[in-house]
Structure formats: C-alpha cells, structure tokens
Length: 135
Image 1 (cartoon, rainbow, N blue to C red):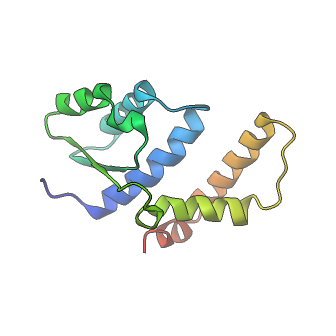
Image 2: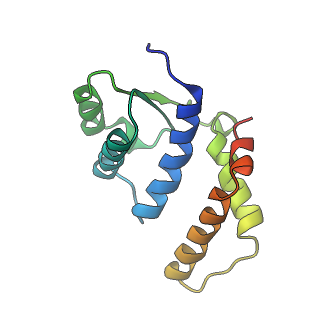
C-alpha cells in the first residue's frame, strides 16, 4: 500500500461528504461518485486516499473500474460496518444537527436544504471546529 498524507485523507473525507450532499440532492449513486472523484483528481495533485463508509455505490463495479483506470493515483479504503466511532464525519454531522440546526422544523425540502447549506458554510469558516472532529 502506498504512503499517504493523513492530512489529505482527513480533508478528502470532509470535503467528499459535504460536497456530495451539496451537489447531489437525493440518492448518491456510482455516476455521482465518479463525477466527484474526477473533480478531486483534477483539482488536487498527487495521490489521493479516500476513506469511505459502506454506501453500496462506493463499492460498485463502475467505481472500481474508474479507480483502476487511475493507475495507483487513487486509493479507496473502507470503514467497517457499524463503526461510527471510526468515522469522524459522523461527529461532524452530530454537531451539525445538535448545534447548528437544533429545533429546526422546515416547512419543505427547499427550506431544509437552504438552512442546512448555510450551517455547513458557517462550519467551514471555523476550521478549528472541523479539525476537532478528527482528534
């Protein structure tokens, strides 16, 4: 297995989850995953380690074929099932629900989407908060 920068892995995990939720309302499937991985490869030089949960789309043949086409530049590692304590982004989502959007009762999906995106933007402006989820 190649050597990877832990800093890059942490950044990718956070960016992947937040960007995927922002750009792809509804179910995230293999084509959206490949589109996002392509985006990362275009904008981040060098090798990338993506730490993923067990979403079926992450393990699809289409995604694995795409990863193989990258010839070692992209590596996927998967978290074990039912192990939220190993997935730091779960702490981020917990904070988001309990502190950024507590007692929020949207009247429709559009309102929920708007306020949820605003909350994520506020969190992004607080790097020490986001980094704390990985320590």
